[in-house]
Length: 584
Ligand code: ADP
Ligand code: MG
Image 1 (cartoon, rainbow, N blue to C red):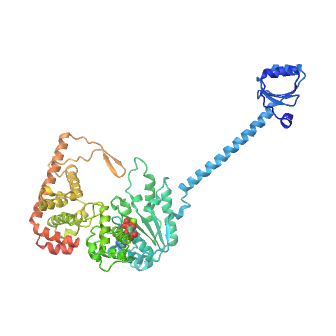
Image 2: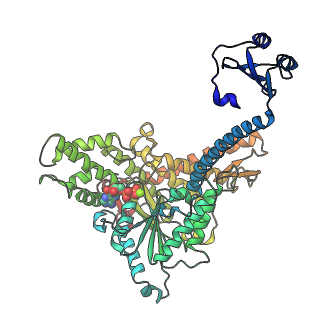
Image 3: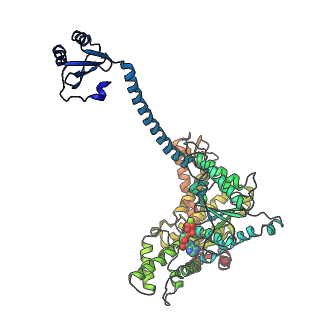
């Protein structure tokens, strides 16, 4: 030990043989021996200290040292080493401990982020101060009216419950993107005077099963504290999709979340005083349990605005902008068929930008024209921009309406419009379903044939008016629908000359929302017969539709002319005009 405190090591490295020689020559004062370390500390008489490696069990050094009377200390090396070792291991242990603590901390942060459903009550926002009013939502008067009624439910529930009426629990806003669904919800928040909780449905979706469900629970607990109260769930389709069998995995979390939502909406626990409003542009993919009475049973359609609606929306969005007196918004409404509220807001905004770029004081027609060019170039194809396109869509829709009127009676046509539906080409003819079919649930061959004829009527009208080679793909969705119905007729219901066989009964594997069918045990010959039959029925139906429309050519033109101007024909007007409908 004394070496350590008193002396410094020399720099000159001495070898083992040097050491033996020096021992003999008597230059060495003492030797400190660490057998375990396989080295010795040598202290020379001149005070220099040296470390020299030796063999593990070096007898020679011991002999030489005792021969020359050199002081020899054998180190109790185990003690020293273990103490050094333990020092090192304590250090290592500390480093390990710190590392573990750090890792634990970061993972726990992550975990609490993922699992922190207890804490993340702030995921949904309570809105107290909203500026939006119903006046800001133009062009969707029906939707606005219905929602105003909801406010009455909340403020005076007794008035309704006294009469035995149930206050609605869920209201679903359905409509194409940008038609003002979120805006309507904001207007309710601004005008209802009751607490308003808003959440995007995607907030429920999380990696871990059960988190979403607990978030839903949380949301409703909070809402219950504040009852009466409105919960708004935007884009509900992200959790409300049709539940599947779950094969393939990945659905459990969403399904649990949805199940929780279903029970909260209409389950054992009484959640009265809470009205849930949800918005979606994909009602077709929602789970049917979500839409049943007692849950989202009120569906409010927020349609694309019509001519008048567009004028009003343009007016709303030019309120804060310096519009020149010469600008006639009614004219611009005629130029913007198929625009949604958001598109119109965008148009006015672009006009203002053009105006600012030219450093003029007022927005005038030129600015709007330039903005319209810019906006329509980048817009969806479904927007009915040109007069020609409007006409083609009108022929398609009126054709369907006429065939429906001939086959099912004039009253079957509820509404004809050339305003596009979301995700579809062309306009929309609303046809009332047949009472008998709905109540009995039976589908007759005649009914299906009629459906096919109506579906193909758009193509039929186009063929008659424009000729075989000038037809467009405007009726693409209807044709695909018709083919599906024909296929079902032939392969499922046995409604064709192939006879009463069902080709659908092969073993089916259900995956998620769709079917994956195994190939059935049917001869190739039968397959080609089926194909022929499908083609046959489709062609005959198209011919029938063309006959009906040809017979009513004058009516067709008349209705198309009106539709192009008005964009929508309601049932009463249709009935008046179609009084001289020729039934084949
Ligand atoms: P979505 O139906 O997709 O939820 P939003 O409500 O978010 O559409 O609408 C987006 C924007 O478009 C709104 O902030 C508003 O400026 C404008 N807008 C849409 N519809 C209307 C409308 N009916 N009246 C006035 N502005 C509208
Ligand atoms: Mg929205």
